[in-house]
Length: 241
Image (cartoon, rainbow, N blue to C red):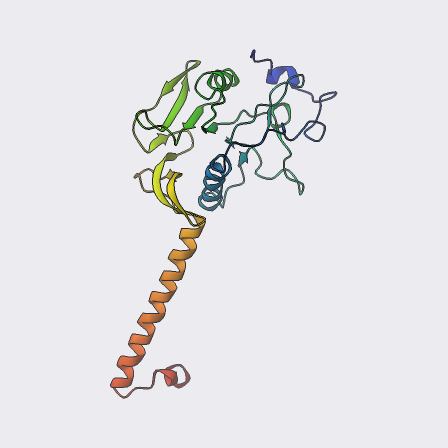
């Protein structure tokens, strides 16, 4: 694929198709649930840790249009930083470069039993598009690394070392850990902070809040019982004050 999209070529969008004019799906089903669940989990966590930011967008199984005369590229997930999180009440149908004026910062591909060119063809496509980070997760690998993260440097992809892998441009790490999501215990991809600590999922955040509330309630009950033993009615403390 030759990269035809040039932002300078599209200073005006007159005559170019909009997202509403372009197909919002290639009608190709995902090979398995993980190709939806894994990027979906990353998006859900990001929505929590970046809840106060409106300058990012995470697409799941959404087409990226780089040329009005070419079909979209459809990664399993992608993150674009520096664009509006919400464009309007109908949300995005697809990600159109001549409208967004911003190439995605990160692209994720989840490999299934049926490979789709993740290690060669798609890697070259994303390199030509100028995607800064390319993440490949292959849960079926046994001997080779299941998670590979590449960073674009001087026009070529360089494999980043370590795990979680620190992505300095977005101030997040990405890595693997076995945990439970949607009731499923397995290895998932997660975001990490600069200290290597995993960010909790929305489910885990809710559970932690419930645990904290339960502990606070238990401590309050224990304190009330101690007061009663001292002959003090805790129910009258507020009214007496």
